[in-house]
Structure formats: C-alpha cells, structure tokens
Length: 255
Image 1 (cartoon, rainbow, N blue to C red):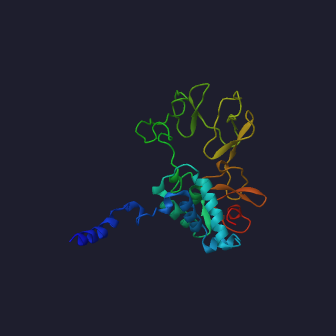
Image 2 (cartoon, rainbow, N blue to C red):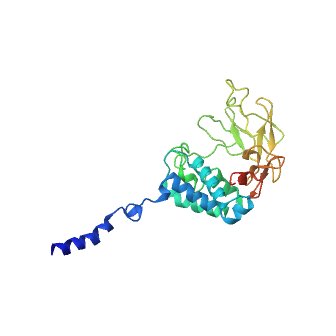
Image 3 (spheres, rainbow, N blue to C red):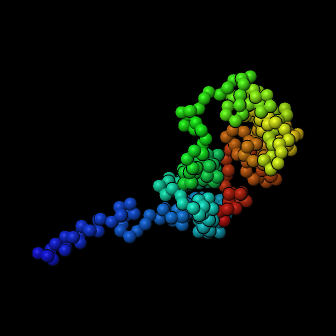
C-alpha cells in the first residue's frame, strides 16, 4: 500500500513546480539579457536581410544584432514581460528588409514602441499633467503667462521678458535657443514654428524650414514630420525609409 502511495505522489509532484518557467528546472531565456538578445539577433537576421547586407554568414549577422541588443537593453534590469513583444517587433521590422520611421524609433532608437517598454521611463517622467487630469488649456496669443508654469497655444510661446504669449518665429525669421553649455544665456529664447527649426550659433540664429525627403540634415529634428535623418552617400539626408543594402549604416552593424 505504501509503495502505491509513493508511486502516486511521484506522478503528482512534478506538476507542482514553477509554472511560469515552463518545465521544472528550466528558465525562460527571454528573462535574461543573453537569451533576449540571442532571440533579437535571430529575429532581425532573416535570410533576405543577411543577403542584402552582404553578411559572410547568417551567424555573423545574428551575432552583430545580438551585440547591438545588449547595448540597447543595457546592463541593468529590464521588463521581461515585454521581451516577447519586442522580439516580435524586431522580426516584423526586418521582415521586408526595410526600416520605416516607427520601426526606426522602436527597434533602433528604442524611444517608443514595444522595445522601448523594455526600459520604461520612471513614473512621472512625462511631467505634471501627463495623464491630462490636471493639465490646463493652452493660453491664447497675447495672454499673460508665466514661463515656469504656463503653456501657450502651439503657434505661440511665453516670452520670458514680456511675460505674454507671443507668436513663434517663422522660417527666415530670427530665433534663439541658448546652448546649454553656456554659463550665461546670450538671448531670450524665441522658438520656431513647428514646421521649422532654429539653426546657427546662439545669438545669431534663424529659423530654417524642416527638410523633405533627400534634403541634407544633421539630426532627426531637422526633418519634416514622418521623416528621419540617416547617413547616406555624401552625408546625412532626410528619409522615410531605410532600405537595407551593402554599405548602408544599418548593414554595417549587421555584418
């Protein structure tokens, strides 16, 4: 009788392990940086990507992307529950051997999307009123304002000298964004309208219209909505899609 009880217990007990880790004694590889990044590399390096990037071996492409993943995720803790969604996003991004803006911001920059959720910003990083509960309506042009607490409507800004909402500078007009490295600001800030960016040395800047596809740029902020700045032959240009091919920046990281 005792032998029968032991036999029954031996059938029941294996099922009482850690359900979240799968079979007893095994750990989900996506909960570790090495496991996540190996999966990332395999998701990015499909046969088409490896071929277009001229990788000597598919394994070289996988290893390069795994190294990139380690740099992206970092040495600190990450949200393991978001790992599968991120790997799926990487696979979808590289499936057609092209990277568009949303995919670029997700799997390359990690500023928004599934992979950005691996390393979320601390609570409150969005600032007061981020949920919209305490946010007040933007002030109209000409209204009195306090630059420390008030927000003017999108076409205006709060003048720190006059303390009123004034129109933002248009393309071709003078603007000012003080270099944060300066000990003392050289001018009162004057931002540009959303279709332009402030260019030049602090104190002698002017608003320049955002670039379109193939226009020269130095940062994403200089490109029109939906475009981003990438390396190309002869310098950086604004684009809406990165096509993978031998010699392109992304492929350099995949070989």
